[in-house]
Image (cartoon, rainbow, N blue to C red; front, side):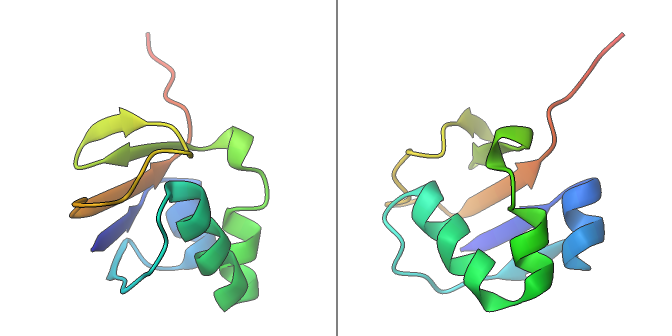
Length: 81
């Protein structure tokens, strides 16, 4: 699946997008897998309450299943005006 990173998440990890092979069943399990890779991932995912996630461009929760998902995007909460 493709994993996309936006704003400060991208800055901490150092790349905007990557292809990930995973056995994770949920977004939370994917976050745990990514966090174990390197310190930069651990820093980006240290506080998931400061993150939002979209699965195939639809907002989702961290307990959402990944079955059939082609794209996961992580980004900070949006503010508007």
